[in-house]
Structure formats: C-alpha cells, structure tokens
Image (cartoon, rainbow, N blue to C red; front, top):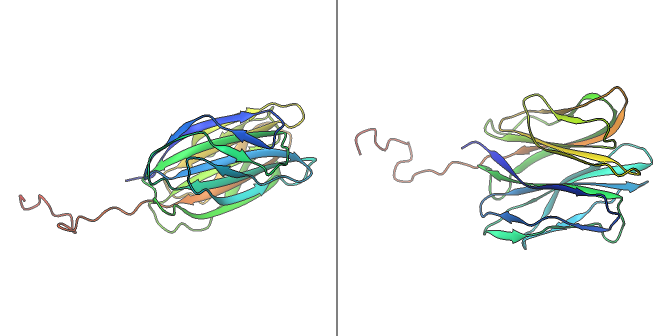
Amino acid sequence: MAVGQTSLVSNQSATDANSYTTASFSSTAGRPILVVVESSKETVSTTPTVTAHGLTWTQVATAETDGGTIRRRLTIFEAYPTSNGSGTMVIDFGGVTQYNCLWDIIEFTGADTTDMTVQSATLAGNGFGTVTVTLGAFSDAGNATFGTFGMNNTTSTLTAGGGFTEISNHADTTIDAPARLLTEFVASNDTSVDCDISGTTARRWVGIAVEIKAAVAAVDVEDPFGMRGFFGA
C-alpha cells in the first residue's frame, strides 16, 4: 500500500498573539499526523509547542528564514493516534507574542504508525525561481516525500515542485509581516524537494523536507509466500 495523505486543517491568523487555536479536526487510529507551523517574529523567531487530542506531539524539525528584520520560522511536529479523537489544536509560543501564525495539519495512510519520519533536512535562502532542500538517499523504495516552504512576501507565489502534489498553499497578508505557507507531497523517493518562487525579486524563504516511512505489509502467517488460491485453496 502506497503512502497517501489528507489535509485535515489549513488556515492562518493575522492576530498578534502568543497562542493560536485551530479549527476542530478528527484524528484516526493508525493514521499518523504531521503539523506544520509558520510564525513571524521580529529579530529572533520563537519555536512553538502544540497540544491536541491528548496525543504526544514531537518536534521533527524547525528552521527560520536567513536574516531580515522579521524572521519566519517553520516547525514540523508528529503524532501517532492509537484511538480516534476530535477537537482543536493549541499552538503555543510560551508567552512570546507573534505577528501571525499559519498552520497545516495533515494525516497519512500507508505510513509507519509508530515512527514514520526517517530523515529531515532544512534550508533557508534569499532568492526566487526554483529553490531546493536536499535529502540524503532514501532507506526504502516504498517511502514517500513531504516538503514545506515558507516565505516572507505574499505578492510572489509559491508553486509545488516538479512531481509534487500541492497539499495546501495559503497566506497571511498582514502589512507588517506578510507570510505564505506551502506544503507538498509525492508518494515516492525524491531527494530534491523543491518549489518555485514567482517573480524577479529575491524573497527570504525557508524549507523543510522529510522522508516518510511506509508501513511494512502484514504477513499472512498461514500463507507467508502469498500462494493462497494458487492451488485452489
């Protein structure tokens, strides 16, 4: 079974705040979740924490834009539901006020249900055109690729990289701290996780790439070689 994904929640808030609450969503047993958070803060960005559905949320990776007066930070968290749940998520910045916050919550099918993030890589830059975050060699041909990019401007756009499917693409157009967030996915190995920044003017951007581990297919102990039916059984 190939790895697949579904967007559960994708939104943003332009409110200056030190915590944000998402819309309600459902989590399903056996379907691991990734959460991407982009936030904006002057001089030094803040790494958030997230809480939802009584799950343990572990940080996968975090990175901020390179330079500039206002920094944008991307952070990815993961969780592994063992029962169904429902409710909102709180994104908390420990009392430090942010200019805005953008978030995407994505569940996966066909992925390892206890430890699906094999490796991650981050990169920040100041440019336009095609930008790429590079992963190492994949550990299995059945594994999938997830990528996310944040940018400090909304007059330019972000477009999913070649071969990738866009999961979500949205923006906060706050005048003092505009930001855009893209998430993308491909159900195969791709070590060059890229996106395209439109325009001819350099934009500060940050990206994170993740290798998603596919679940190991269950073995029929009564027919371990898949011969059931071959002899009319």
